[in-house]
Image (tube, rainbow, N blue to C red; front, side):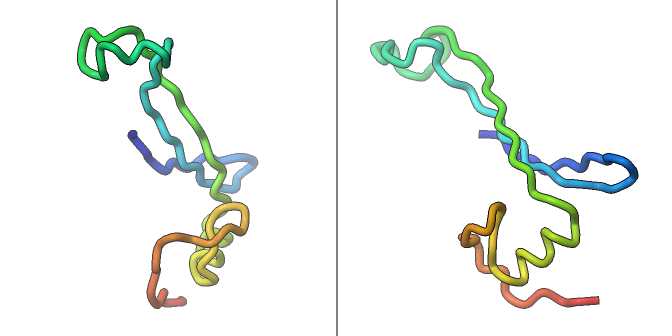
Length: 82
């Protein structure tokens, strides 16, 4: 799975998104040939998750919360303010 964070400017404000891209089998029941090359058709699937503005992302990191208020699985340690 490929993941990257990218900014998007809307009306002069910058917001951040996480984009995940991966390949998925067109026919998931065709497992006889495995996942290697030549093992059947696949398609690229892209999922985009809204992260928010930089300030709101920093606030969630300080509180240990991820997108949507869920607990963040990563231990951030101390974050300098400034």
